[in-house]
Length: 324
Image (cartoon, rainbow, N blue to C red; front, side):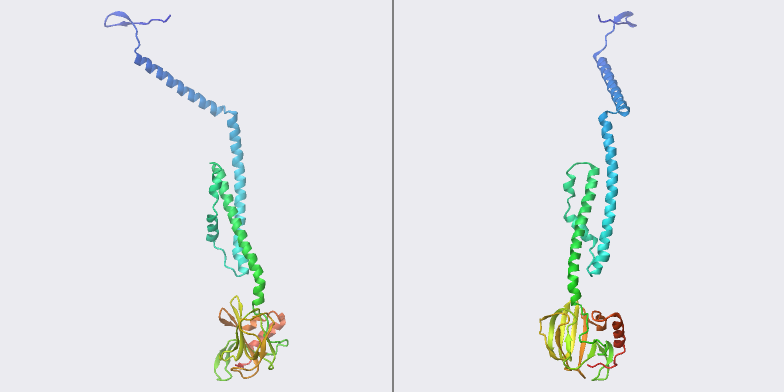
């Protein structure tokens, strides 16, 4: 049976029945409920803080292991990136320098990475930040490796072309000169034999009997064969490619024709004294990118070191007069 409560009313001077208004009851109920909820939250927090669930412990252990593995993988990625950077530097500074190829700019490598950007494909796997970071780094590294492989393919082509280039560079004397006695006038300022004035002599004069064979000094294509009234008489010009060109002047007769492909050592004509010449000889010039250079530095294929050193001295001490 519910206990009835009374209170003494000082105004009426009587004991009256105590009645609690509904508003007060509701306030008391909500205050109790709020206190209960707060207490429950505090108890739950303290329980989870000091008494974690087995699944939470397992997840925490997995996370710690994942962080440790990520650190290991990240270190390996950094090592690979350093090795990749070293390969790219070697590619630019060594391999391409050997074959006279332009280095690959970093922007080209970056552009290739942008073009093949597959990071977005990897990111859709999940929202894990660590996974994304690893995927980004590995994807970037794989693209750099792929681009570097392409660069090495280009270098392999340069290597295969290098043999052809070496065959084209002038590398022998234009006439047989085993005893090194046929260089009559060297490269540089010489006295013109006709006008008696100092003049730049753009090649070497090889004195030889008329009819002595003249050889192509490197593979190439004949661009001029005959007399063009330029003072060289019957002469031949060969374009060897790679910026190299050679000229053979004053022939008694030309053997080759315009447009003909010739190989090193092939007879292209015979020594004579046609054009502006004072005696049978072969005037020989080497041009690189249109500029005449001393041909004496291009006889390394048919001379040993001692002969080459002797030839340099002979060319330097040649006659003060040229033959043409």
